[in-house]
Image (cartoon, rainbow, N blue to C red; front, top):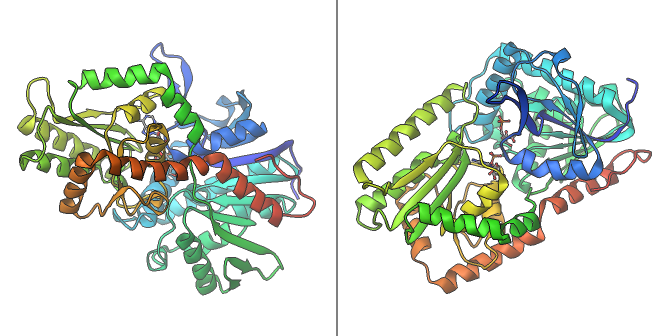
Length: 477
Ligand code: ADP
Ligand code: F6P
């Protein structure tokens, strides 16, 4: 067994919650990393004075990066070489697993050198977690980039409680079977005591695959391993800091900024909003086309309706993402060129990452929030919008293929592949009677306010605590 460190709670994620960036004056600084994982895990780790092991972006070498403290979190930066960034991160994680796990919206590529790099990076992260974790500590491994870590870590440190949570969808068994390394991934995950998914269907797919492919005995949500260990697979739908978002939304500063945003847009009657990482799974192209067609059809007027699309650039070295960025740039240019008027573009398109206050102001300014992924593990943006609508107004148009659709049933749900259906829903949402809007929003708010990210972490860690080794220390959720 490897010797132990001092952390009672260790998060292992591909990324640190902050990215290393070069500031305008040429010095190095840190910026919050984009995406749902960071939004969800950061508050829990701060509350526990825990340690977070992850990549800070870029291609630094190990000796350039020292562990440091950031408001109650110990951050342990893990270097990646240029080859690892290309093969483990851009390659296996984001050009093999990401499309495969998202219903093959893009074609996954299978390359043996990518797999080798993924395994090597997972091993290094597992070794570092083994060094940092105290005797009997809890290690919570995050997401698809780290699926081999649980097993590797268990071999090094059998004393630990190990949890794993998959933030993205777990694919149907037929798609997962395509993966040449399917057995190794399943065995990697089985190193954990508890494997968490967003939806119960995903947990069931996993257990079925373990039975079929690895041959272990299973019963309902439990897997029985030959060494006597039991692994539980269950759903823990992730959420947001609901009260925090509501409080922000109620602040004078955010309220004033929301009014200002509407003024800057020319005080249109209806503001539609999309907020996403620039990712082909999010359905940005189809939603903008649907909006443009409504203008062409004469259903909406430029000047009276405007679509604000915020898209944070993401994974820009991966080909599919570059193609998407160009496609959307062209589409927005064409729509605004054809349909916009001086001072009134049909689409206001921003490639930017904003602070939480600005996000809350955008949510406050929007009459219709449009969330149309082809497949999404959960989608926190939908929940953030709901949390910010404290006066029970605002309409949510939501893809039935987002994990959030299971909880936000009162949204105007759409099939993002059906452009006409999406057009009707956009119109219905923006023309709905205030009473209908309020009824729907009230019900969705109840769900989001009562199931926040603290409750999510609480239930995962409590479940893990009840399954782990009897001598393990428990963690304050
Ligand atoms: P994913 O994890 O796939 O990126 P989610 O919708 O679950 O998708 O989470 C996205 C998170 O990133 C949300 O918390 C959202 O507020 C944040 N986010 C998305 N776009 C931006 C942006 N342009 N600026 C700041 N935060 C953003
Ligand atoms: O869960 C989706 C996810 O891959 C997270 O791991 C991460 O928070 C987010 O998307 C951003 O992705 P990346 O780390 O590749 O920029």
